[in-house]
Length: 254
Image (cartoon, rainbow, N blue to C red; front, top):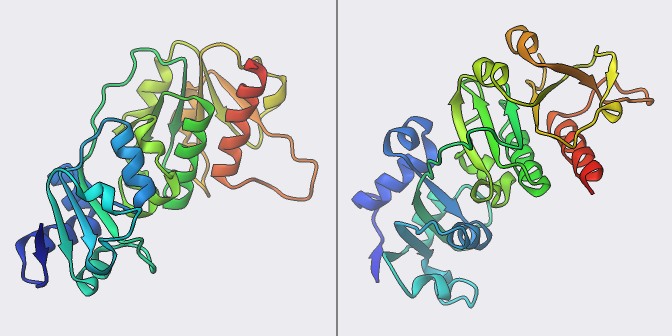
């Protein structure tokens, strides 16, 4: 097992750049997973890491040792590892992977269109809820947070390996040509989400945390719906609203 102990090491420099730069991730087509849970989800989905790196003081931990048996593995000094890990208390394992590029289903039965969701926590939570509810595809507009950033990956909790994630999508065209009910959440809609039949082919359109869905995309969505809120709150967090939609469909399909 190779050991990395210098900040001048080429491998350390490469990992550091990928961890901290959207541009680097996109140019390299790679990202870094942090922690046992994400790495396990990755491997279970059939995605083989290009490199697994253990924190020097953690490499003999029972939960980490199995990941160091095969493939390209390395250990890294604690101080260098902590400079790459995006969390305050690292679990002790990182993995470098190629970002999975999967073609969308031609006409998904259940998908989500995300319009400029910029908060990484919201993005990850939406992907997690969508995957849990059985969605097959998530289409992200060009203004969305990088879905393969460390914060989104952590919030997604492995969802990225259960749902096809399509970044930089031309959302208006996809919504316009969707062969099903493209349902846009809008606070001023007349129709309640709970009055809709969600058992057929459905794509939910979720908008920006502050501005909502753009006019262009609203104009091509087939249905506008609102989530009734009898309380004295004007709106829900984007991730919460998305989860309500997804699991109302699950309830109707049961």
